[in-house]
Image (cartoon, rainbow, N blue to C red; front, side, top):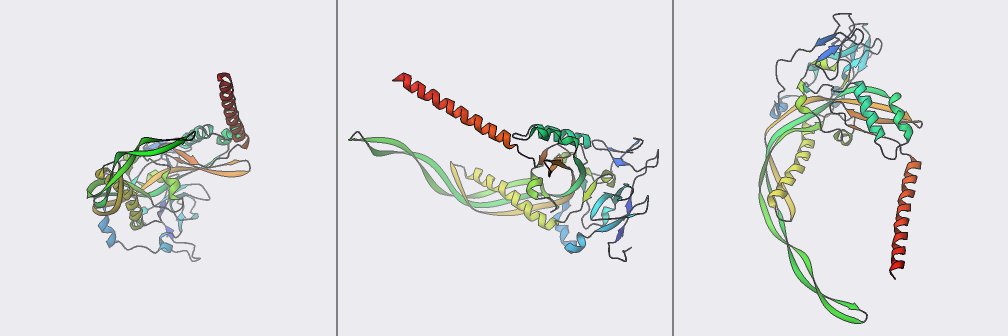
Amino acid sequence: MSDPNGAGAEIASRSYPCQSCGASLEYAPGTSSMRCPYCKQEQPIAPAGRGVREHDYAELAQMPRKPRAVAGAAHAFVCPGCRARTESDTLSERCQFCGTPLVTDASTERIVPEAILPFGIDRDGARAALRTWTSSRWFAPSSLKKVTEAETFKGSYLPYWTYDARTVSDYTGQRGDHYWETETYTVTENGSTRTETRQVMRTRWSHASGTVSRAFDDVLVPGTSRVASERLDKLAPWLLDQAVPYQGRYLAGFQTVRYDIEPEDGLELAKERMATVIESDCRHDIGGDEQRVRSVTTRYFGLTYKLVLLPVWFLSYLHGGKTWQVMVNASTGEVIGQRPYSVARILAAVLAALAIVALIALIVVQANANGR
């Protein structure tokens, strides 16, 4: 049903009631169960009955692409508890009125998530990871270690595309082999000139060409533009071998971001990442001491893709009157983010380094003086 005010279409959403007290269950990180936040009753998540599947990339040509404005449009979750509407462009949220975890039917998406890597680290685990991270920062203010007492957390699943392919690449280039030549030169010292020799390294270049092949598995590309890809890349690696077939129950209690980068666009990014590996293969195939790769032509076979949801804790903390952002890989505990620097500590380190240099210089001067 559409909203008469144009606020967005209502979509089917559901929650998972606790069989003990009737409250809404949430996914319990690090387990294969849902847990009631009130009575702590747990309910196992039944296996999906299938494995994680790869999808033939050629099938995408049969799927019409939605206009960007439609694909990313907000919709209205209708809370099954209080019947309130929550406007969002996500796949899962919390009711803004009663806090009930809401999960939508992902089958309305052009591409349905195939796999999900469930949260392996809970809020306390993320807090511990942040504490370790802050305590290990060089030149950080000592007060930074206290931020874990006043941070805010938000757990989100982010969409990623993975691509598999077999590649065959024809290349041309040059092979450089080092050799040594004896070079003669003159030296003038105290008015006297003499001839000396030295060994000089030269490089002999020759044409090279050939073919290399490689099988790529799960080349990972972010499916969202909400977070800069270079930041997300720093969260790698991901424990993709622990991913399970998608089920909405794993989303309950967390926000789930919808993809806004289409798989066709993601493939171009994946090919760029493959190209770096392929060029390394070409250089290895050329051999020699140095290599120049002039051209590479790659053919792709057996190209498949899938949409996978990966877990991230987003943390923000206040320090020195400024908000700092941190992200935690919720499967490995890897932390990346912003942090303040202590000018006093940096200055102290610089002064200490200068003092060491001055001490070494003094020792050298004294040694030279004693040697005269």
